[in-house]
Image (cartoon, rainbow, N blue to C red; front, top):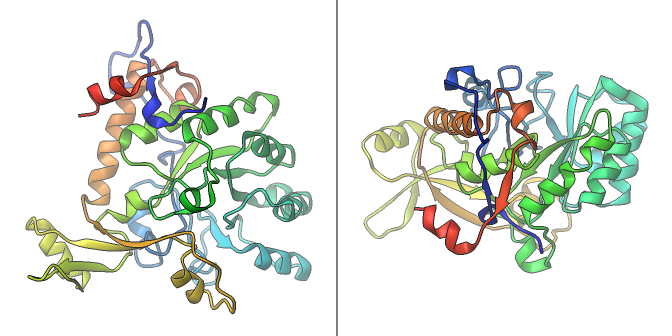
Length: 338
């Protein structure tokens, strides 16, 4: 039996020696354990600074090119075919690259990843994904992949699980991948990706062994996301507004909305100039803006520090995959999920 976020609860340490949250460091070298999803309605050239200023790790979508913004701290996304061509041509790669494919189980991706790490070693940091099998995580650890996106079909704009039946319940998937870490001196970092609905889900992912959590829909719902901004007219129809008007409306308590779409929709495929369009495994929708990025990050940081204080964890190293958790019934979850 496999389990998801609602099926587990974190158990506090018997006696925590932490007297104040000031003793806790919830960062890696000043960065939160979070990544932007490489989605074109989450982040682009216009709002990178907002995510940087809030200490979020940057993973850029394919439409943002390394030639336009060069920063060795950012991950740049490439298709598998692009990487194969760059390898063949001996092109220069950015320091940090993501091979952005939906199916991380392809042998073709594995072989290219192996070739990249054999050729460039620590000159590059390689992120791949997505996977939904703990044994696959172990295989990528063997060839030195640096980061791996773990999770398929869970995203709020993804329909893979519903239509294709490919999925692995996320809490089990993260926990079982993390169990393989002890076999390796430098295990691949786990990025839990997709389907996070609240702070609690994110904190549970870290507790169960994810090194990072990647967020798309959560960040799209922030005022600063790059999704087009809309309001509703008297007939309940959406109409687009500029950012300044949206910002003023949000400050006044008027509902505003961000356009959001899965990255395998036909709409996105067209934007990539594909000659043949595949059946999309994603949807388009409008998300109501719920917070500013700074406000959300402040709350997340405080909630994470609170969880770490209960579990006697002064650092992320002491928290991630190191705390006790228990399975709970649906009735137990409903009791405290107010």
